[in-house]
Structure formats: structure tokens, C-alpha cells
Amino acid sequence: MVEVKGFKEGLEDVVAADSTICYIDGNRGILSYRGIDIHDLAENSTFEEVCFLLWEGRLPRREELDALRRSIGAERALPPEMLQLLASIVPHLTPMDALRTTVSALAETDPDVRDMSREANRRKAIRLTGQLAAIVAADHRLRNGQPVVDADPSLFHAEDFLRMLTGAKPSPEATQALDVALVLHADHELNASTFAARVTAATLSDMHSAITSAVATLKGPLHGGANEAVVKMLIEIGSLDRVDDYVRSKLARKEKIMGFGHRVYHTEDPRATHLRAMSKALAESSGQTRWYDMSRRIEKIVNEEKKLNSNVDFYSASVYYMLGIPPDVYTPIFAVSRVSGWTAHVLEQYEHNRLIRPRAEYIGPEYPQPYVPIEKR
Ligand SMILES: CC(C)(COP(=O)(O)OP(=O)(O)OC[C@H]1O[C@@H](n2cnc3c(N)ncnc32)[C@H](O)[C@@H]1OP(=O)(O)O)[C@@H](O)C(=O)NCCC(=O)NCCS
Image (cartoon, rainbow, N blue to C red; front, side, top):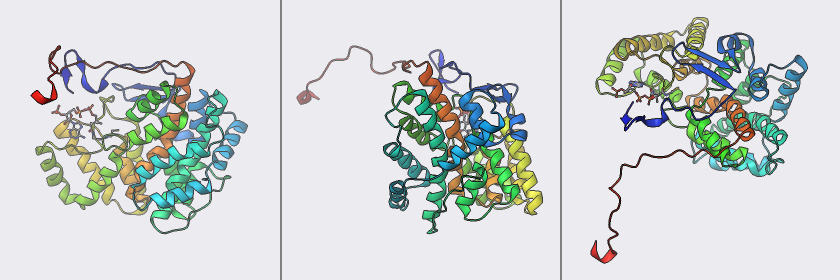
């Protein structure tokens, strides 16, 4: 944290919007969507139900949930020209870059693209939620020379996404683990990517532009990119007996350990609590405890040495790895979930919009400076 002339860099502690979507108490480790505790949602809800909650502000009745599940399922498909675009960029771009480009291009295929009514934007939220999963799955298949798998709209999002990604029916355990991960990642107040989406929407730009900004912002290793960095670290360390040396020497070099620290939580991130338990359960049921054991040891050292807690990205890495999901899909999966929160915030921004335009503290050469003609420089 860097203090400059009475304000903290990085907009720390700045309240930039009223919102009814997500409540966080960073001192007590509380996260809730629309006031419902994340632990209750993780244990009882589904990703579709959370989407409804974020977009509509209340839990759905059964028929409303069924209808939303079918609507998202029907949108889990890409127009042929978008599949062609994806196939042409996949050899040249990372999955997050390809996702950003395809989300932007999707605007041109959206029947509601120029309609800024609430109803049209709500349809775009559903469409983008289905389509993002389709892009991530198709990108992975194309990248690996495999045929793209069509959606089965009758399935829940988590199950169908895994099926479209791997080409095989996922186990109930894998489906359940991914569904909980999607619930846990769905929203997080004014995190960097959501803020980027709201800034874009606040200029009265369209939903696709706002979500493109969000995907671009999520990509960075200080935000959504951290989960992929965590698994790379686990693979690089390789075994439990090498953890201590690796982590301690990284800390001695003042390097960050990915998956630790948080701008808002001063105690354990409540999402990490669930992901740790999921990582443990998957380790025990599969008999491969290496990644969980290494993660626990890393956590212990970073807790002791830096007083930092793990965040959402730390244990999601070992969970996804044990589910057999390739590392370059981890950050895209974050987007597959967070698009629900991004779109909820964009809808909220449009409802009582004002341009978001902060000021900068000027610390450049003192005013006025002379203008020196080019021949005298
Ligand atoms: C999340 C994060 C970006 C928050 O950043 P922030 O609020 O700006 O905090 P800072 O980067 O200023 O860190 C404050 C101090 O803690 C240290 N720190 C923060 N995260 C750390 C980490 N993961 N490993 C080691 N040290 C860390 C910083 O080096 C700094 O120490 P200093 O004051 O001695 O210089 C930051 O903790 C981080 O980079 N974590 C790793 C990336 C990550 O996991 N991102 C996913 C977030 S959900």
C-alpha cells in the first residue's frame, strides 16, 4: 500500500458506487450475494440460481429457475461465423486473448446489440453467460485439434460446460465441484474487472463493450490470471519436500506468492475456505494428495512469514488440476462464472447511471513550464 498526498494508490478504500448486488465485510470474512451468505449459496445453490439472484435481486421460484436453465442452455452455442473466427485466432492467441476478441466480435451477431432497453440487456446477460462457456470449451477443443462439442441445453451449466470441454460425461463429483466453483466466483463487488465493466457501461457504451473490458481486465496475473500462476508454481515445485526452499527463497527475493493476499479481506477469504475443503475432498477421493499437501504447506509458510491468507485463486488451482482441467483454461473458467456478476453490475449501472470520471493528483513539472520551440530543444 503506497500513500501519496492523503490518498492510497489503486483506489484502495474508495467507495465508487452504491450497489445492491454484493456485500463484503473484509474484517469478518463475509461475502454475500444480495445479502445471502456465500456459504449458504455454496452448499445449497446452483450457478443458474445464483445468476437469477444476481440479475433479479431475489431467489427464483422453481419454474423460473427451470426457465433460466433452459435459456442459458439454449445460448450455449456459437454462431458459425464466431466458430470460424475462433478457429482462425486460436493458433495465434492465448485462451484469454481469444476470449476477449470473440466476446467483442459477438456483438455483431447479437440480435439486440443496438437495443439498450433493460429487457434487451437482460437477454444479452443470459446470452453472454451461455456463449462465454461455449467459447471457452470450443477454444480448448480447437486448440487441441479436437472436434467442437455441441451444447445439451437440458443440462445444468456446470455439467454441460465440462462435457463440452472434455468431450465426455463428467462424474457427479466433478460436476458438483465445478458448480460450487462457479457459484463462488460469480461476483465480488467492485473487483478490477467488474469496475472496468462499470466504467465502460457508465459512458453508455453497450453490454458487449463492457464485458470485453472486463475480460481484458480479468486476464492480468494480479486478478484472474493468478489461478493459472498458482498451478504453474505447484508444477514447478513438484513435490512436498521442495516447498520450503522454494517459498522461502521466493519471499527472501521479495517476490509475490500467487494466490495470497487480498485488497479487501484482512482475514480468510470465505471462498478459500470452501475451495480448500474441495481440494482436500478431491485429493482423498482420488488418492493423489500431492497437490493438496503442497498447497497446505505453502499456505502455512506464507501465513507464518507474511501473515497473508490464501485467496480464491489459491485452492481453485489444485481443485481444477485434480479435475483434469488444463491450466490454460483456469482463468477463462473464472470468466465463465464472473460474467454473471459483470452483467448484473452493468444492468445496475445503466439503471442509475452517472459517468465515472475520477481525478488524478498532478505530480508533474510545476505549472507553468515554458514551451520551447523545436529548434531550441
Ligand atoms: C491481491 C493483491 C493484488 C492485492 O494487492 P494490494 O492490496 O495492492 O497489496 P500490495 O500488492 O500493495 O501488497 C501489500 C504488501 O503485502 C505483500 N504481498 C501482497 N501479496 C503478496 C503475495 N501474494 N506474496 C507475497 N507478498 C505479498 C506486498 O509485497 C506488500 O509488501 P510491502 O508492503 O512490504 O511492500 C496482492 O495481494 C497480490 O498481488 N497477490 C498475488 C496475486 C493474486 O493472488 N491475485 C488474486 C487476487 S484474488
